[in-house]
Figure (tube, rainbow, N blue to C red):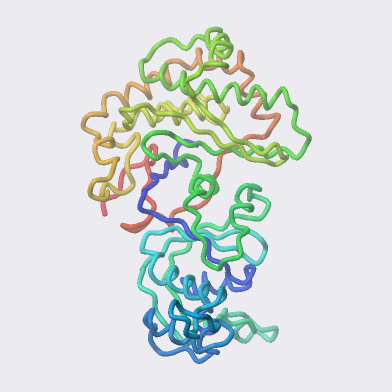
Length: 414
């Protein structure tokens, strides 16, 4: 389990966009051509799209000559003048957004033909015009090679590196709701956490650690069981502190702590959940002001222990690793002025990383007692809890991709 864990690093300058593909009709073409495309220029030019991208002024002038996108209105001097109508303004705005706002490194989401979503990253922010259609290769019944009858002919495009696809039955209702708008290109920055919860088990903004759980049972959910799950997640911050300080894990004290924490004014661990079967549970754990690699490691271990995903014995292999390999950045190069630059220095963290791994290993009996006291294994089995797991390698293996912290794997220099 630990070697599969990645902690994605959120970047403020990474925007997230939802690009519609005719209800998924062209999603396969997006993947095959490693691109995204919109058909707004076809609409503006009645199918006769120029060979190069028109300037903003030229496109607006073209729309003003089209009755579908403009209408006469009186200007301030009372003269009849053509203005863009709502359709014309929306078309111009969408072309501007696609061309100017989607930049290299931005996350892209599109709907697939089966109702699921594909996630990718813009690999080049420069828009381009391409008149050659994107064709999907197929094998005909007679064994010969051919192409699918549906071709993508949209000519305004950008290059994309596509990553994982999320099945429709894996999509929480909150994500579906966030992408119900009518615009072809929609900014999802206000739903950043929801999108990252789809593809990463953990991610951090430097102040909190976000943790994604899946409730995979198909039976009706017992209210008492899910209530105890919430209580256990509320204790992750306390367990994180215990591992950091190498103090005693007192199972009875943890149970008593629940009562004291319930109505405290200071907000600690928070959770959102869809009580479906299957369903989702998303948690946010404050890390404190001086966030460091050891703090993140301790918090990850606390989340996995309190949901029954990892035992103290499974942490033992971390003891045999050099400290710099226990948890590290996949790419050490960060943006200038990045908030994580000082927080991920191994030189200052190595000893504590080793101590945390040792503490988790040495406290196996205490953790087992906590498991028994808090019914952690029973809750996991009853609700069939797992963590989010998707293949995100394509989103990370380049300099402007998603940077991640990895547990138990040596870093890669880029």
